[in-house]
Length: 97
Image 1 (tube, rainbow, N blue to C red):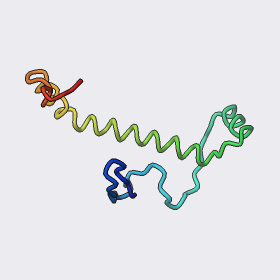
Image 2 (image 1 turned 60 degrees about the vertical axis):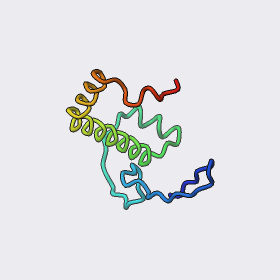
Image 3 (image 1 turned 30 degrees about the horizontal axis):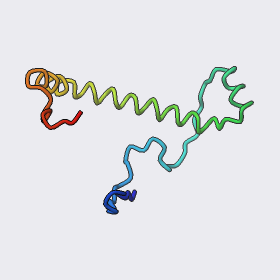
Image 4 (image 1 turned 180 degrees about the horizontal axis):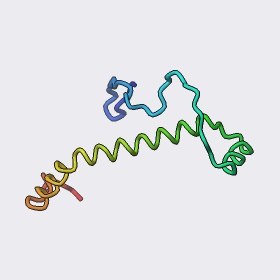
């Protein structure tokens, strides 16, 4: 991904995110059980069921990964919060707000 810093006119090359929830990978047929009324509404509105299901699963995976990260790092987060309570926000004297 190419990004341009508009303030300086500088270009930065950034790799594409590896945790892209909708990669262009090969699709695999899957059977799902859905609420029949919801399915009828989706069909009436021409919703692409495969794409909608994939987006929903991607969102669920993202939330699960975030929750797992928070759990794995809970001790470090708690430690940092305690440090801030005791010492204040780092470099707070330089804040302009």
